[in-house]
Image 1 (cartoon, rainbow, N blue to C red):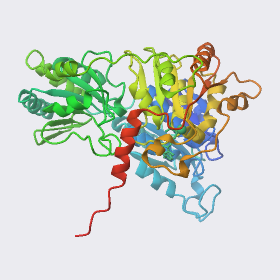
Image 2 (image 1 turned 30 degrees about the vertical axis):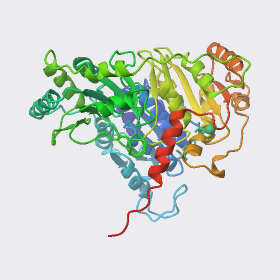
Image 3 (image 1 turned 45 degrees about the vertical axis):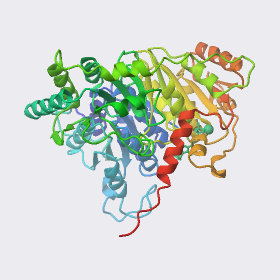
Length: 565
Ligand code: TPU
Ligand code: MG
């Protein structure tokens, strides 16, 4: 068959495992959308706006490995680019596809609608280049396959977003045969000699230390190294902690797992064990101001072996050009039967007693955070994914103990409030078989609320716990002022507006523990649409971790400027 540019692109998206793409229509992309609709095995899913479209594709990529969003030029794409920045920060290969001006207009001096009113339309590509690993502009059908393949291949290899703009008069043009012959190359293999040298240096590091622990970082999933990390934990028999943004990237039911390492917001005993360790093997971590709790908990120096997705730093040497999963597998194999390091785990078991379960509140008592979190935690099964928004929802999710298979999705590097609603939508489209639970604050929800309407449209039975604490509590704990108060909404009442005449979404409100358990029971029965449960709690009713972490972040923000020499 003859492939048009749009069909070629659609076929490539299907070949990399996409079953859906997210879209908002506009005249620059309508013909392209027609072409994508004609692609077998690729469904088109619509969003309310382009920011949400980008985040939906981002959420889809979390569940499916990659995602795609199709938007119109400028007015659409510039909104979507915020979510693309998020995909870059979060290491997710999201392909942003934008319709673009007719190729005849380029260089003609014409002023076009939706642009900034100048005859140069190149600004969008320039912006996209800063926020993606590959950005291409397609203005002729002949070059389209090469450019499309370059963008998609680079995104998959680097686990970063890519950008493709297609002139609106080129989408339906036939491109050069034979079309997409076979699947795209995903990666180049690890260099065997470097791998060998990295493993040898790492064995030396481990052999000279007794109190070794493993620290799991948030790039581990993008590095496709979760299984290999588990294998290394078992091989070393040491204590294993996850960084906050890597919650659920290591099975919490594994006997070596000790909890979250996050400075003084760590789970009980974990900071003490990490501080006590004389060798920390850090796997694909992101050490930023938030994850180090305002630079107060940053493992570095000679006692840290830092294994990144494509290189390893150990004993003052760097080994580049290897894949983390290959390195971890080779290291486990080399260590097996010779070196184990159980001291950190033994010490943890000595110093930390299992905490007593939180007692249920009386059903008629005013709802408090602890009771809300207790009831949500009871819902978690191996099929659950918790999507937790920036705010105290982060800290509530981090406290939950996960059975094997349960996942937590966080967007801690980008930290765009409102991310969780469209990301939940995208995730649910990708993984309808999972039970998806979203925890989102009132302030965050107000940014992207309308995407709940798309969950209604597609009848996705997600459960959204909307924490109405009347404001930006996370900001209150960092630095308070009148800007942290927000207009209250009737959140539960929104659902009837989203349902309109045909939707099956459910909006419920809980002001007591009893009302919350009733609402949850109704949510579990509602399989024909989302259930939003507005949980009303006091403004200052938050986790102790938020308070101590907020204090650290405030102190880091308040460091005075350096003095001039
Ligand atoms: O649980 P809680 O009350 O902390 O969460 P809520 O109500 O969702 O409040 C979140 C407050 C917040 C803001 C305003 N967290 N971070 N920010 C700053 C911010 C502003 N704009 C964007 C797009 N992202 C942000 N993180
Ligand atoms: Mg709030």
